[in-house]
Amino acid sequence: MSALLPWIAVIVTVLAGWALIKRYQTHMVLLFAGLVILICVALMGGTGFLPKGVKPSGFWLFDIFATLKSIATKQSSGIGFLIMTAGGVCREMPAYTGAARALVDVAVKPLSKLKAPYLVLAGGYIVGQLLVTVIPSAAGLAMLLLVALFPILKAVGTSPAAAASVIGTSAGMTFAPTAGTASLAAKVAGLDPIIYLVQYQLPLAVPTLIVCCVAHYFVQRYYDRKNTDVYAEAAAVKAADVPAVPKWYALFPVLPIALLIIFSKLVVTSVKLDTIAALFMVWVGVVIIEIIRYRDVKKIFKDAMAMFQAMGKMFAGIVALIICAEFFATGLKTSGLIDILINSAQGVGAGMGAMTVLLTGIVSIVTFLTGSGVGAYSSFAALAPDVAAGLGGSVEALVTPMQFASGMLRAMSPVAGVIIAVAGAAGV
Image 1 (cartoon, rainbow, N blue to C red):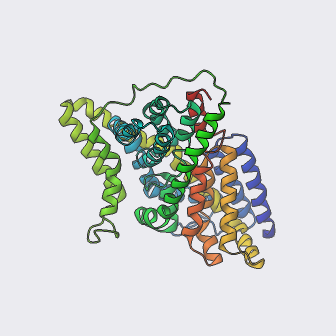
Image 2 (image 1 turned 135 degrees about the vertical axis):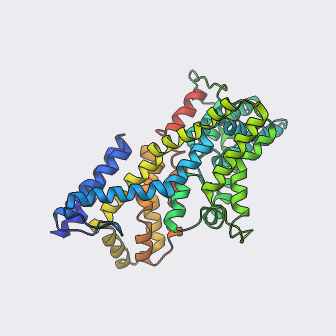
Image 3 (image 1 turned 90 degrees about the vertical axis):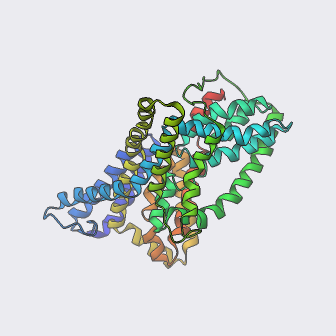
């Protein structure tokens, strides 16, 4: 009877994929897909789905929800709390959004004096991509760049479509340790986020950034000269939510990353700085500086509270999605489907390379069709340790291309929220 379980898992996975393409709510699709698989496992006599350290209750249905509780507890106190903190600090605090705009001004405006519009455009892409370290949300970053970068690119002579393409692809590679998918990849691989960034992400991100930058220069120049873009009424993007701050505020977005690199195994080995501690420390520092500047403690404290409110939003969005995705992945593993995939790959001589291409391809297709990279990536990232162990490869080699694909294919998807928003703002 248990031989049917892998086939049930395949059918449920296909139905879940169909539901995601049809724009059903991602969290609930993954949650109920995992629930259906685990119920089938329990009814067929399976008991191996309980996480380590969780004692059986004596009733299989209670055990399933104890599994969900264990996953939620682990994620909320571990990688989930890191994602909430990073998102809370970087997304909502006015001083941080102002600092991000200051960074755009410092890095791009000097270029705008050159009579080379597409050089400015390529430079704007690099700056936008680096700002992922400040604003991990693709939509949040796009809104900031529409206010701060879009007018600069149009003023130097590029078309709205060219400027929109740079902004829409700016969050394509989420290689910052504060980004949700990057933090999850580091956790799955058992690595410190900074070590994962420096040793595994940057060697891929730097040449990819250069290639994308050069491609933007030539592609956007070609289509601007072709001049066949069709424009509609552009949506208004207001600058009121991005406060004006001194230029030296541009240091704040990069300060947590700099501190984490300095106080890590890479530089100062005698002192270790935790990622969450670094984010909180810089956040408190910004609050103190804002109080000194404005001398209005009540207002600054109110602005600073936005960080905790944003943490709640991050839980409801990304952390809850990771919980549901791991619950789904638990069902897939318990059904025996992953073991069959590994054994089949070994049987036909397919190694880690082929399996990496296969899983990255699946993540890419689902991301392109749904416009969301986090759901697809979270579902398959949890499987990486078992797949890598079964094929004798490294987890890092498996999760890194999957993580990059989840970001880059989102930037290529016409149904992604960020692309729809940017296109509407540019009237394309």
